[in-house]
Image (tube, rainbow, N blue to C red):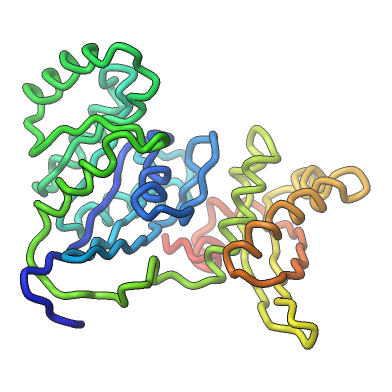
Amino acid sequence: MEKKKNFKSGFVAIVGKPNVGKSTLLNSFLGQKLSIVTPKAQTTRNRITGILTGENYQIIFFDTPGIFEPSYKLQQYMVRNAIKSASEADLILLMVSALSKPDSSEKEVIKKIKELNKKTLLVLNKIDKIQDKGLLLPLIAEYNSEYGFDEIMPISALKGDGVAELLKMIVQYLPYGEIYYPEDEISNMPERFFIAEIIREKLFMQTQKEVPYSTTVQTEEMKVRDDGKTYIRATIYVERDSQKGIIIGNKGNMLKKIGQEARKDIEDWLNTPVYLDLWVSVKDDWRDKDSDLREFGYNP
């Protein structure tokens, strides 16, 4: 680790309910897509580490799964992962929607985070959907009087409004420290993880109801062939034969579509031509079995 004079560095956890825009905010900070984003709740399952280095700072962001009431073991892992990430951070960004007052589930999330006794900035997201910004004032006042956050910042993660100002605020709260990672590095996570995430994003976009939530993806082989293409073999795991049939689709059309869309994004990510070899396999009730969760990298 390198020491620099007057240099700030630290770990910042982005937490909140599912679907409040946490992954979109991380991508906005980094200026490129790192975390997968879909309209469906609970898309993020793992802590995603994103690294942003400026002239006088380095921020290691944790994009975390949404905090909610879990129904099965995978969801329990996701919620524990989020709380653990917040507990390990120097600063917490607690994201909420600016479109409504906090409901009981939001209040429960705030309670869990406040119990950690960490410096916490409340981020009011989705202000681009509010025409009269004056409507934010009573909401800010309510959060302020009820919870006493260190700062409250209205933003639009999607449009970028307020994101630069939020970044400056984060740097102010960071401790002085060293550079943890090379300046050009944006994540410390392996390529195989991001490849699996890209495939999972396409599954979430192309399938409905319980099917996407019943899937996980493993990148099982990756090598450069003689023709210069990177060969990638990945397996999509589901819980039921019926789900396997849906993902393969009529004459294999659904799997082909998922593969084509994933391949384009993987090629952009790796900046190299890719041959993507996709398989589908069944593991009964894997979301509720500790052994399967461990095998897939979700340590229960």
